Image 1 (tube, one colour):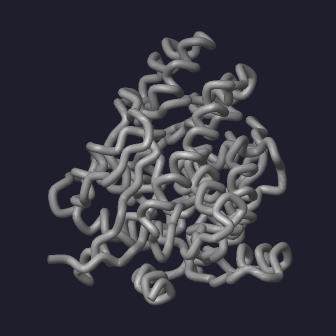
Image 2 (tube, one colour; image 1 turned 180 degrees about the horizontal axis):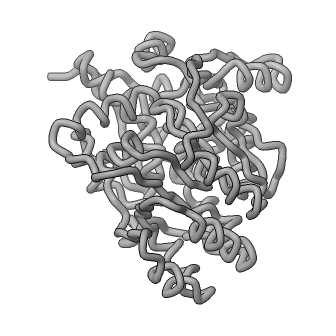
Length: 370
């Protein structure tokens, strides 16, 4: 029978599960159980089967049947859900009495977990609440929104902040003089390495060179102007392009009358959203990425892939120093020129040290929790 680690891991989205998965695996390897608390923000069942981890011990709200509960709308319903989640988390933790409460990243679930487990709502609490992937900052409230707000809330209400890089450690130490701040690196390094080793055993590479597209940021989807700019960029791709499409992205492409236009591009293959194994395999073997995502910037560094970032701000500036991650500022003409340079092999990936750490860093996090 497994011993219990007295660790509660609170997860709401698939991205959070991907980055918490190495911690779960490491605990299992050591023969220690943990509480898996799911807020219900994303459907989690298929991902648990994918990663061969246990199903949630507690599900705090019904899972959505589509990819996410709230899409790109920050509404009254989302606000009420957030408040309810804070109270449910607080109530559950009082019953469980853990030693550590871990939550990851910058979603609504993250901020709910941070507040719900904090000393502000639990003045007599005995546990430490831990923010995994702490210290990320874009410097703009609206880019990305609401993630920039969520990560600041999560850092403020946590006891232990696990920084992902030298820069994030510096930011946290400047802002919080009395918190325990530890630089650990980012668990995505272990997640993506682990998944790629498995996926390449069974998956076959696409013939020839291709660009991989990943687009779903709220601030882009909500803007008709930006989505038209993104369509112009995609039209400029000169090689084959593969685009696993999120359902919320598809909704807005149709809303702005762009879907049929994009489907008419001969070298563009739009496919349904793929599982993480397939996505990592596609990423590891592509020529370059076009994205507006967050974690994918980190994955591009792991696999040393040029990354064209369709955003005005990034909370991961460490990657920009690598020489192959590019923040476009949504400048369409310059982005088209950049794509041509990449396709013409005029941008080389030089040797660099990954600012987010090396494979095996999850063990350090488990040692800290001991």
